[in-house]
Length: 402
Image 1: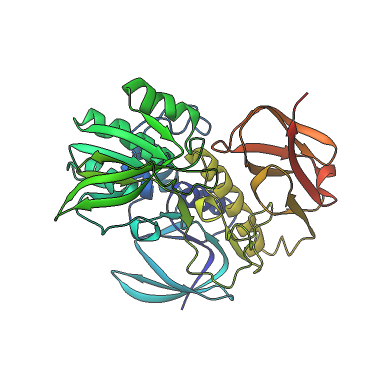
Image 2: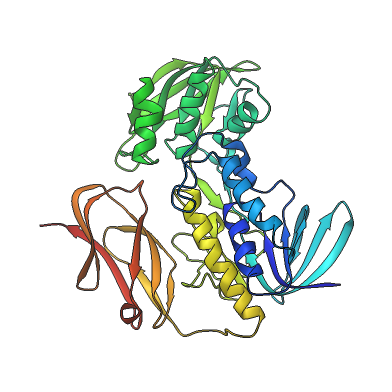
């Protein structure tokens, strides 16, 4: 059995930051991932990364390379190209790599395993999965990594950021993006991506619309599109047909948490419950990045990974133990909040999404207004609370701003 101070699972934006932060505190860090440093970042050849962290406008691979260069100067980090197949509550992990299988006993674990896309089989769409139907991430890998085309006439279902970026990318590669469909009445991606990826290329965005059927022979030939009601359900009688040979799905991301089914999760959101140190219901296991909640940008995931790595290292050294926490409650107008618990008496950062768009809204913590202005469900609001505000349970709510 191998021993390490901190085991980091996942070498994406959050995992790289966690390993780097932990290595500043402890002697031994093991970073495990089957892919190159950066993970999904390697597919993201567009810019927009690193503006917060490095003060530079980088592509995904460049962002990952900056971290890799920093890690190369830290011999305390053992990089293993492999897969963690199991993880016990006592922080014993089985790691499988080209060298074989080994058991790793870790004093602390950071789970930065990222997220996965919702695939065609999870959607209520009539028809079978013809050739040409794929997720936005699959399309991104085919085009950006392997240099392959995915279709000549494309429909994109869902307005998540990866789907928006692929609309632009496919257009630049010569494909005709017929439309981007969104079942909700408001977009799912960042406002800047709506402008830069759709408006600038005259790609239509159709809100309150979805695909209800796919048709074809061996390959996709057309999709049936319908309007949706306030509950995002198709409205009978509004169907129309769109000819296409590719359907790209950008319909949401789900945290990858199969290694830790024993962690406490929130019944409403199904997310793992974390505190403001990224700690979980099991001491010594920390969760960060998209495995915790979906981040808008990689810089944000890295910031959370750094926090998780720091506290995991302190736990491994015996400097931190289970802390007293207070709950965070999502009140009226709040769709989700992370973390769901705050360490009492410590400053905290909250990631909040509202449930409805407001041209002039306000987010309140108790009786205090902490954010005022335009609010949109597709934009995460980052709030910082002082130590005094975390001594008692926190209630978040949204109201119209006067």
